Image (tube, rainbow, N blue to C red; front, side, top):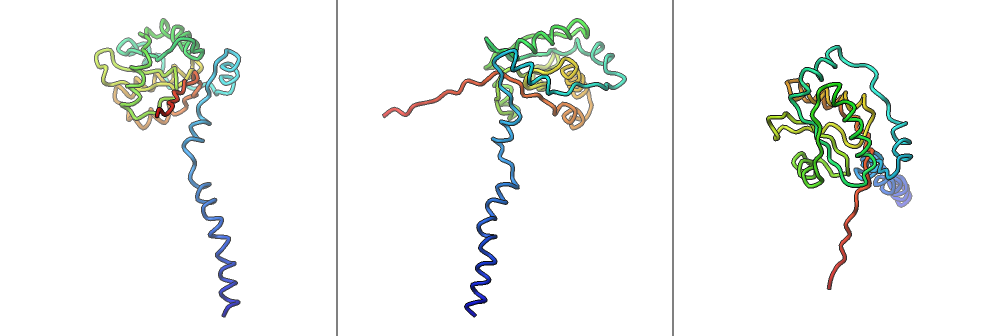
Length: 197
């Protein structure tokens, strides 16, 4: 009887010891996943190194250019920025290149407005830049188009999908297409608070 109990204990013991390890491995840590998706950069060299890893959109729907040219003027593209933000400057230059091609309206917004928008959509704030699209006539229908800078072709793809979502395409279709944010952002300044006694 004692031998059977000892065998049972030794048979169950590994499961008790290893179960928490397997459970932890089965559920991905959100912080680890977020860190893997966010690439803070402070120099042009770091920015270019991350952009070199980002695939570029090669295929577009037949109505891509017509949609951007025909409906682009009905929307405002807004970008969060902050002084000294390398990816912000990169994204801004890409938007300025797209602006005349498609007749787009682009402008910047400050960090307070960007954080407020992120909070309304329950998006974690990871840093600048964040690109937003909204109808000219409705500031309440704002959609995030990019988190971090990206190649111009990918930004144009996201703007196309955003316009389609704003004009009737099922959101799930657009979100799947846009779920390729680069996460190339400026580092977020962390505020530390000391306990006063």
